[in-house]
Image (cartoon, rainbow, N blue to C red; front, top):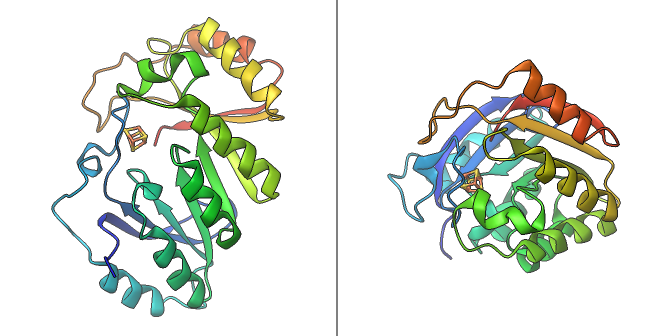
Length: 229
Ligand code: SF4
């Protein structure tokens, strides 16, 4: 069996799975190239492996009863078919399992959902804006299929989007809000894009920009702000 390719590992986090003390496994590889990506070293399918899956499992074994959960993040965790085996192994250790995903592989996500406890789903843009945001061929319909499946499953989840006024204008925000509401979503976490750790310089976001954001998403609840993924 192929092992999960891991590009980073955080042994303790209070922010990656709401309400849970979690370890975070950063899976290697993502086909998209978002300008605001904070993890460019995770984008190639193969990287300079820093942690082996066996090492991570051995560490997690020592944290049973101390941590609540393990979150698979990335990169795009669902890009690796072997993720399903990794999720099963983590559940067998007694942890809850969270997933951060951009929802680009809905069939893989559907197979994983029964084994997950929480999903943070990144919606990058309204459908028409996807390729412009992710700088790669993107099937926005697949992402919205993932959103529909997550909601139909009843699993706990969070819908979030990363925003910067240079990338995402008020018309984009209104279109995004409309498409999310049509999918039954009325709560959105907004992550502000920042230049720290990215390959693209973006200017600081000002109060006027934030006021525009709140106005465009006025029908959404919990338009929170926090750093981007
Ligand atoms: S932000 Fe997420 S989806 Fe976009 S390139 Fe980075 S890892 Fe991939």
